[in-house]
Amino acid sequence: MQPVEPILGHAEAKLHYPEIWIKYPLAEHAAAAEFSASFIAMAELCVILNEFTRNSFQSTREGERFRGFRPEETLRYYHRLSEWYEGLPEQLGARQAVLPHQMKVQ
Image (cartoon, rainbow, N blue to C red; front, side, top):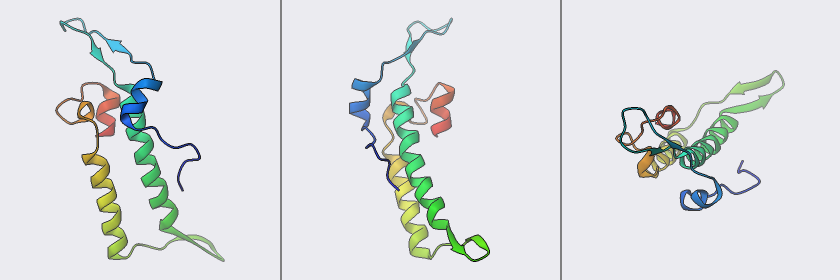
């Protein structure tokens, strides 16, 4: 199920969410926290996981039960998650992440 309000893209999010700058004691310059990028990435991941979870169960008279996935469904989710990961902005990449919320996205 898609969110009621569309998720902003990474470029649009920078215009809507303020940036927080953090200066570590030993650092020469302040670093951007990139909360907007993390928020958008987590929202996109939640959409995929919500669909995955919703499609994982089916209703029976006894209640909900796990139904499993056919190989083509599994492959489709694999591709969606891979596309999501590959589409992460550079600042959330494994080599750039420096703050805990950025590492949680990884």
